[in-house]
Amino acid sequence: MADHLLTVEQVADRLGTTVRFPRRLIEERRITFVKVGRHVRIPETAVAAFVMANTVEPVTTRRAGLRRAA
Image (cartoon, rainbow, N blue to C red; front, side, top):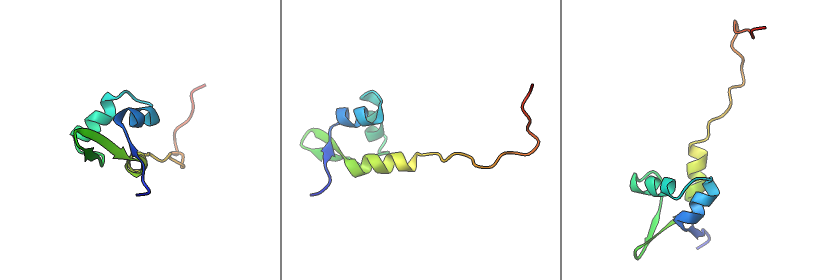
């Protein structure tokens, strides 16, 4: 098995959030997780996939007609 399993606390630390956020992702089934007995673990690849799926790319074109106020 090449993918490391992370605790909820480790995922929260990597995402820069509280523990409540990854727990909510798990409850809402918005992230892949593994049950190990009564413990919940999240694969590193699932965290990376979640971040990629929710990444918003910047807008590269400027809208014509919008001018900056002096």
